[in-house]
Image (cartoon, rainbow, N blue to C red):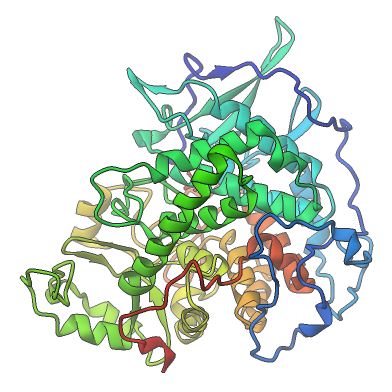
Length: 561
Ligand code: GLC
């Protein structure tokens, strides 16, 4: 079984009226060869690809809410798609690029003749479950591909339709969900008798395990910023209903409660890993997305009325969150050694082992995995618990959002290089490492046959993660790492039919229950490819370090050595 459950139509049907946003032509557009560029990377020639290790940090975007029009800075000169066999900067266009575009276009979902998203997978050989839906998280790489290709309309439509869905009352049985919750997914319901179309959304009330899509709202904010940055059009973000949507999402995250940490407490399965996998608590994927969404919101929120108050709360939270993450989630050789020697049962403010972690909870694999040079953000930190597993998405987003210091970003890259066989192997990229096996698998996953060792979320390899790796590599000045990974996928992805994930220690096998023609595998490849060819796209998904928001680290500076 997939995580994806069928959608009940009983309480989740939303009639979406045509609204005031722009219309689309019914037919998919041809690829636009004159591509718009993100506008904060002024001199593209500063980045030459067979690269010097110089990091790609040079925009001035921290001046919030400054979105200049793209064309004022760039003359268009990009290329993409079928019709240009060779790029400006010496890259050969791989033959699978055109196949990928065609497959991506086939996945477009229309609502009342307007493109509103892309379907998760077009695979007729399998029980569809809800792979016939538009998932918020899955649409992000599709959206980026369209933005990079100068086709922002589908993205704008997606953002506005999902915003309308947010305003609906959502319930699981008798329990009402938070107002700001964004759907995990939606689909278009055609009523042949009434000849109408309605949107049907799932906020977790139909999903297997009733998992909460905590990441959806964060991705929505991140995508809104990418759209604004790519198009230079801030009129969408400035609309009162969009401003309200941002505030509603953040309202549920910033509310005061019993928390003793600035991280966000979540139930298992709250993100891309949407099944029980022992990520409950403070999973790195959510913390990194939360951090990034907060920073994007700072740029998007209008500093008036309620917006002003939110900005203040965001700044305070970011300050505490970056301190917490950079200090307590970070693991490198020095920190590992410190934990290994931790004393326990320390009381009071002077405690070194603040969370009372038992050194015996360090598993053997961590000592082998940790290179001399390198480090990463671990999976989870809470009382007496450190989940030392590596999670790819969280670490890449940590780099893109600058939750990681520049030194930590480099260290993550060092680790990926040093542990290439484990994390990349034959097919990029491991979603998590290592796999849970035997007794651990039974206890942690609850005997989940889909998440057996080295499969699916449990150490499986997901091509979609390629775009995140590529963006993180470019940002930290290591694009050659991404190039190697992209080449690996090019050897197989199309041939294998764009699978959702691969299995095995090195990712050699097409995943046991992997869907074929999985849209985000297709879009992830395209985005990686376009970004590597034209790193000025990076600005859409990257934020520079803001020293005022992120306090200096007090703990050992082990990663600087
Ligand atoms: C699976 C994945 C989830 C994805 C969905 C649609 O449930 O775990 O991350 O969004 O499929 O592709």
